[in-house]
Length: 131
View (cartoon, helix red, strand yellow):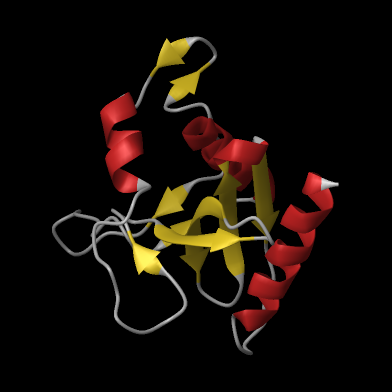
């Protein structure tokens, strides 16, 4: 992934959850890496246990539209409630992964409105994949 940039503090340390930028192609590659359970081009580069732990609920939020894993948001989409995890960036940057459908969906925009528009889009996409 050639386009990835990450901001750091004055000591050169990233907080791991902010300040990343990458193009849409690298966003899709990152989603595919997680869909493949950490395997890239036949090599395990992220442990399968980390993939499992980080993409499942670690913090059950009593309110809001998604729960949280480790740096991934977690919720279901579609009429069949498919387990989905997603990275959410500022102003409409998303990487959605739906393992049971072998699906990666990437959005990049500059939309400042409610995130519910993305939930509707994902519900529509997931439902279309079931047909």
